[in-house]
Length: 186
Image 1 (cartoon, rainbow, N blue to C red):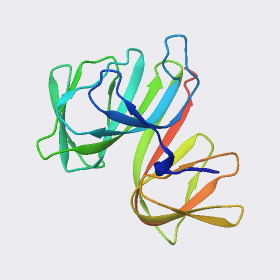
Image 2: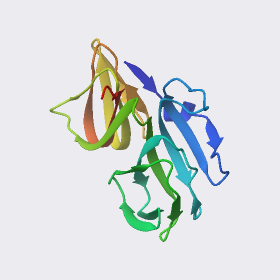
Image 3: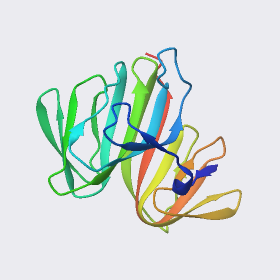
């Protein structure tokens, strides 16, 4: 188990300069300069365009803030908090923020080589959630702790637990995003 503290994440400008992201974890970078997969947190302060990532599938989830409107290839989608939305990373995407700034969790995976999934889960003190190899758990709200090898580690908002061969268990009260990345063998 590895814990990636949110406070340790480095701020990076978006490729198109329209916002700020913090990379949580990523796979190997390909010849095109894009990672095989990537998990990141983005702060969106103003309306604007998203960078295009041809050949990548994306999952966008508002995790802080009320709502964002995401227009993908001309179709508008109302993005409420904790509701993941999957779309083609090469698509033209515009975001508007009718209720103010928001933070989003983004997952990208190289189509045909990698797959990804994102599930919002409610944490429990009585039923710990196992985080296995190839999975990441991002604490979105509340209080939680991650336990592996009998040692408990408290988590703060947006801290991430990276699973390993020995599954970690996360318990507490609140909500988290459970992200899985896996080779696409089809």
